[in-house]
Image (cartoon, rainbow, N blue to C red):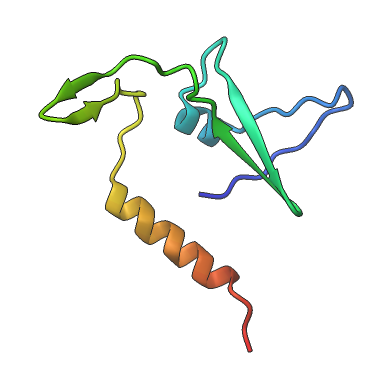
Amino acid sequence: MTATFTIDKAGEIHLPESLQRVFCVAPGLRLRAEVTADRIEIVKDTSEVTQGVLKNGVLILPKFGIPMDAAAAIRAERDEQATRAPRS
């Protein structure tokens, strides 16, 4: 997913509704900016997740409220990277 947003005069970022839905925006939500080279990635800060249940040797973490299809997400990421790959 790609979204465009702007920074206002106060230096604040206002997330578009599409991103607010993805991040399940609510007061107190913590986001983290990961900066590498010329990229900034905004990710949900999940460092506070400390509870989980151990079932048959597998740690089950609480739900974050976002439906996720891991296979579809991997395919989408692979396709996006393929479009950004340098062409020879």
